[in-house]
Length: 201
Image 1: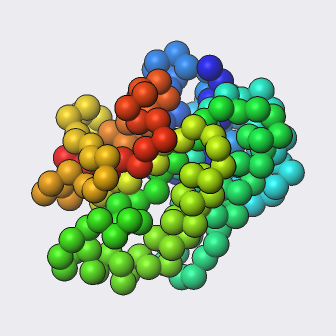
Image 2: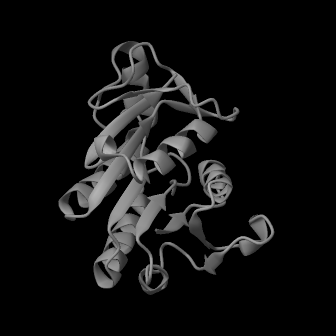
């Protein structure tokens, strides 16, 4: 299986690349600045807002892991636009699946004051994620949506919880390393196919 990672130099994408290499997977990073990658990384240079560049990068790839993020908290359609480019490239070149990092809150699944604050502060980012996820679900490709709670910089533990409809009860945080582990597991776990999974400790 050939895997291409978008957002590969971000905090979560870096963990995906690291763990994929440790597993001996055939992984390629799609990046604007290859200098941010570790030595000996396989990469394609380009910008995820460039439709033609994204489409070309999908040639020969089987699966997509998207760790793309929006810049800032203002109104944006960045994520949905970039996701649309990825899906068009998948259609053009026959890729099979997309594994997308969204955020807890896209389904209004966080309850109480914490949920209200998330919907207010992150309203623009969550809206863009929802639109990107809608595109993915309507595409016909196999997909996994990761909905992590607050992302933290911590070690890989493998000791996280998942929930297929909401978020794990009482869960508040999860490390980017554990989100990366989940994404790689989702490549071959039927339980995560065509599912939106909440993640937390």
